Length: 373
Image 1 (tube, one colour):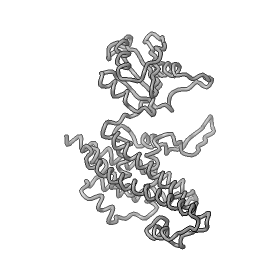
Image 2 (tube, helix red, strand yellow):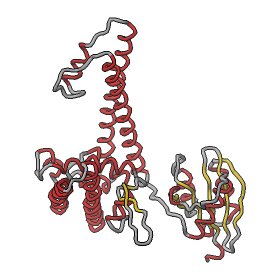
Image 3 (cartoon, helix red, strand yellow):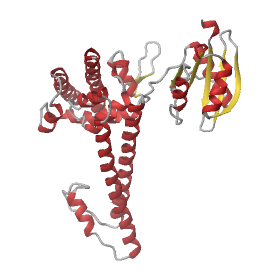
Image 4 (cartoon, rainbow, N blue to C red):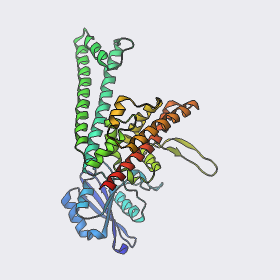
């Protein structure tokens, strides 16, 4: 019964957890701070009551979902909430762990918190892997910039019309020489770092391909289906599948668009309507992938050899959605460009609409798997 339910708020840190409880009769009190260890958590919740009497929540953060999985195994309902959507009082200027835990318990009892999707073991493993590759790409970009800026400072420029960081560019780097030993050592270090970053990405790409092949059947089907879309290759499809999880958890495509943070922000009051840039408050990894993919739709619809290979073995419904996406998104790109919109804005609008087709493919695949089961 609701009268016997206790709402527990946890402010989780690496070493400690601040605990507060909101009773059904309105009392909200702090229970102090405990160590962040499984045994301490188990003892605390055993004192608070049976699992059916408790509802526990804590903020998503760097500590991950370890506490969630422990509570779930103990049979205690737990939700991980979005920290950016927790109500904040404008005049509140005092922040402590105890106050944060009490605010979580109070807001959880009143239903003002928004829970996030908690990935299962397969999704979390893939998510860690694709995020490691994303970090490797950032490191590679920084290493290349450092090397390029070093060469530019000393007037060493590659031949004109040479593709940056291609095979010929790498061969040209081998011919660069400095008379000063210190500068030669600097060049060697920068080139070695670029090579190391490249090898790291190749190694992670192989690991992603292996992990995707060993993933559960539903996850493999979603990864294969998303690759039917133009601009979404293996790494992009694995990233989307790992970050989005089950697409049916979004009732409509607009919810997925809002989750990505690719929707326009708005500040309207009375008769005035004012819209600005995209919110950027959603999943940044999803947003990066779809914006990169959206650039492919500036080209006219076509079915090249690579895309045809990716679509081999997929259902006619999935390929039809992908083909419809090519026509609609290319037309959208051309129309917005003809209106004088800047290319970045046009690509962002196309990316937002691309999410609708991603949602359609994901929902179709999940429904087919459900019917087959």
